[in-house]
Image (cartoon, rainbow, N blue to C red; front, top):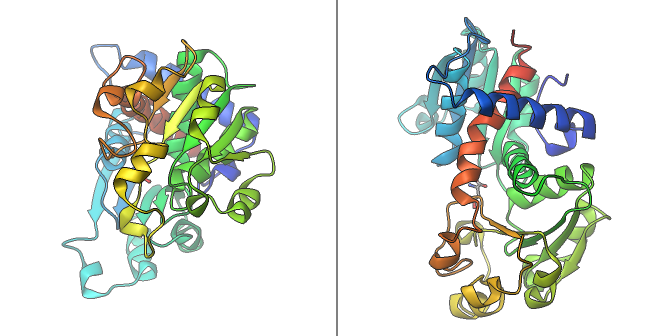
Length: 306
Ligand code: ASP
């Protein structure tokens, strides 16, 4: 088993499948009255969050607690980080406390890679800048597999702000490893061809959402990440929504069995219409629930739980 999960590229098909299968076992346990397993008793998991998060932080905390680990939640606000303490000094503090795993979210791409050099425990990337978010990709793959029964040969459209999306990057890497066919869809400004090519040569690019929908099993809408945009990438929110937003009319172009995904948080009314987000085809709430099982599997396998 690998020691760290810094990138979806750390996972070959066998390891990724083992994580998804283990997550399915974890999910079966969550139906029990007592949800806790003693697997990581006596181990310490630190959640080190330098960037805001709702779902991911809560999900990692729930996952570690269900495995009976001791959980320390550290958020940059209210810590010595606001006094200018460097990531390295924080890492040395965690090391002194004997953290078995550090789950890190950071605005700097590559922060988990640096951290892995400074601590002895496992490092799990919970989102680093515009780079990667591997556990999101795993929970997305898990959701696709449980809804549609397979990943191999599945046609997945990832739509919108690919340029700033760590979710898109990790999904492309993981899904192509597992045999899915990925098409990136969005305005050319948000899918520069060199970015798409550098990500994976197996991925296709389209600027026409209406043309891609009828042949998609999965459509994954990305949040337009205005907080990471220094330039203007499209004329207006209305124009973006008209060309790349998923509304009810567009959703009808999907095959009957197709599902609609979004990693959250959503800009309702921009990349996704509220009626679409709340429709039975949407797996958005399911993705959150699956996130806990997938993160339990990741912590359990990385830490060699019993
Ligand atoms: N929650 C995801 C992330 O942290 C997606 C997003 O923010 O749009 O990357």
